[in-house]
Image (cartoon, rainbow, N blue to C red; front, side, top):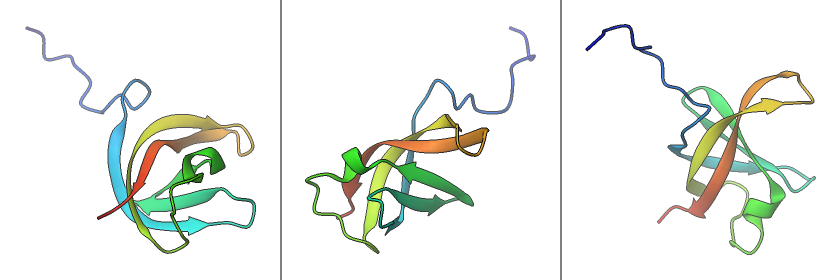
Length: 83
């Protein structure tokens, strides 16, 4: 077996768990700061979940490309209020 494997995680093909305090913006989207990065949360993930600004949430995120900033970023694919 070769030891030439990349030591870095391939964020493009996997989702990863996160937990943090949600910051909901006026536009309906939100961010969670996790391990020094901002995870974008689309309005559709917040819909009907009774999540308010400042709540602690759990979820899963993936690597994504931020078209507006033209750089790599992170996007939530699942979110729920932490218990």
